[in-house]
Image (cartoon, rainbow, N blue to C red):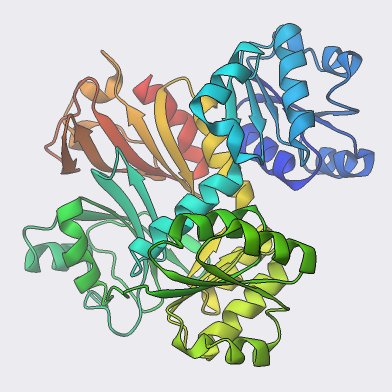
Length: 446
């Protein structure tokens, strides 16, 4: 697929490198010549310095031959104009990154579609949705639902309380014959393992598990986890994510929101109905203590500064908060943040990549989750008529190395993948995959 990415920094570069690894032809348009020169030194991606709203620049990028035009600059109006121009000049499909959540309402999306913007991605809105899901399922480090929750991906960090420590997958299956979940990956010492029957769980492992709804309770029990009832939360940062999260939760949960900017604090206080807005610096431990941090169930740090978010979450943990969630935009910080005690990491680059990647596949993919702190993805494929995966039971399929089928959704029923199960036409199939396996999986389901 010929893909043009218009960007102005890390989001565009992350997308370009990720999609380039999956054998697409990538051209990246960016106004920063120095950054493009650095990208060229590490990859063979074609780069063009310029303004993506310039017709001449888009023509230079051969937009008329583009299968997909992706615009992910920080300024949403630039993204919208880029996509509108690109479609007029011949791009087959366009995706724009936006920040205004009003634009994702159905009527507004349809209006933009008529103007040439086929898809809109709002990372801030998706981030708020993820935070809310995590607060509902507090025992998991990360959670992602497929097919409206008929299957879910859970990430659980195994501590000394886990009942699966020093046991292999075969041992666990023998002791629990009615399991409704399956481990699809273990992340240990910055390395990812696709587990076999003899692989053993160890303390501090990050276990990625596909589960049915009725398997969640047993999964958490074996993982040594207990749900925390969330009644009070602290939100640090009154930007779009913080404000949207508070607005969605304030009718059912007591919320205190700390915002350092005075004018923004005043606006939030008038905009939010049941949230206590505090103008102050959340790095001030005395302020946190004065506002009752010790009695708080969850702490969410979503300022524009990753270091502030990490630091305040660590303070909150030290002061007794059981659940912390941090927005960490620097990808290099994710692994270390998870290892020093922050429960969950949210990253807008990965959120954007997760949304966009499915439009670059030949197979039908209804959702993709790019995982935090691990170079891997979980995909929900739809098995097409006469595709390879429908021809044999799973144990006879030549599944690419670095991938594993976790479960299947068939109509209103879900199944954990076992060797004798056979995938049928229109099944939704959840697959965990390392980067090198994704384009091979694409062919199997196409």
